[in-house]
Amino acid sequence: MHSQTTKKLFYNKWPYKVGCTVRGSYKVSQLGVEKTIIWCNGEELNSSYSSDKFIDKIQLRNFSLAVEPFLKKDLQIRSEGHHFNIFCGDEVVFNQLKHNLKQWVRATSSPGSKEELEFLLENGHKKSLCNKLPFEKYQYKLYFKESFPLDQREKFLKWTSNYGDRIHIADGTLKFFLGTVKWKQDPFMYVEDRKMLSMMLLYLGDYSKKILEYIPKDSINT
Image (cartoon, rainbow, N blue to C red):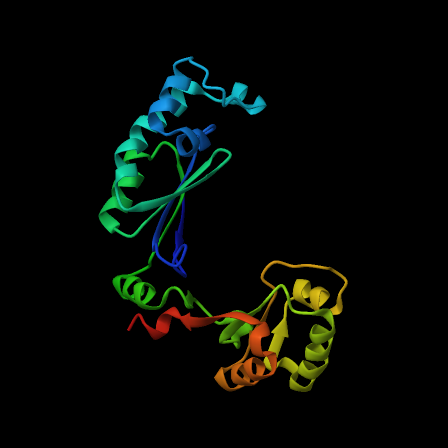
């Protein structure tokens, strides 16, 4: 099992994540536990895919029964293929999930300390904890709207050349600015400090999308 430290809230809400791997677990989300168990018992429900023949029905049935009590709690599920991720806000529930689903759990994420948990709950939707700043200097990550017009992108790129390494534009975003790719999801750049960020936002106007601030862990775990 791979354990990670939560750097920002999942879906702007959840500090804990339990990731399970079970072939066919998407059926729990699509059909619900009761119908998934019926399917595992051999009764088709007109929801079969070609990949269904690779599903271990005993394993899927056991997983469905184990996860069922948790589906009534305050949490969020995201399933895709054989990945079944559970997000929650309660440490007790998190530990119960790890214990009750341990044979299927492949990865978990949780805050590194009580101080980090408190910080995330207060700021996690707009700030990200880190061991060190990106490239050891950039405090902010600035996202651009995908609708940013090409001519305005080119002008902005030329303007930013005045500021050297006070900003850092990701390679994929650079291609987006130059028009070598027509579209990119969440194009972004790193910005050194608040003063530089204010200048970027002033220039961009409505073409900025969101801002993420990086906070070194050692600044809160004192």
